[in-house]
Image 1 (spheres, rainbow, N blue to C red):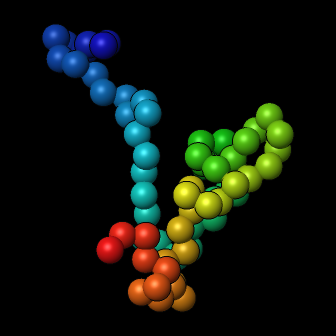
Image 2 (image 1 turned 135 degrees about the horizontal axis):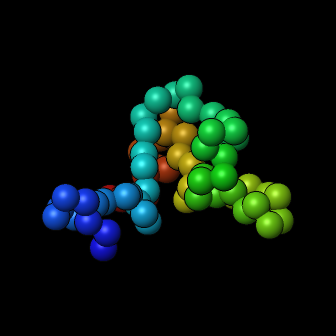
Length: 65
């Protein structure tokens, strides 16, 4: 792990960031390449398990009991 001034430097590699903002645009140029559901090789997107639209869901849709 890299260090700076004798301290470990954390870069956030491999983390998943979540947001509760209803205005997030997954295809915005600043985040599209890092979006977990984006396949830059095939130029396709897969939202299931990568993007959750919680609005409009019911208790029957819940993934956890």
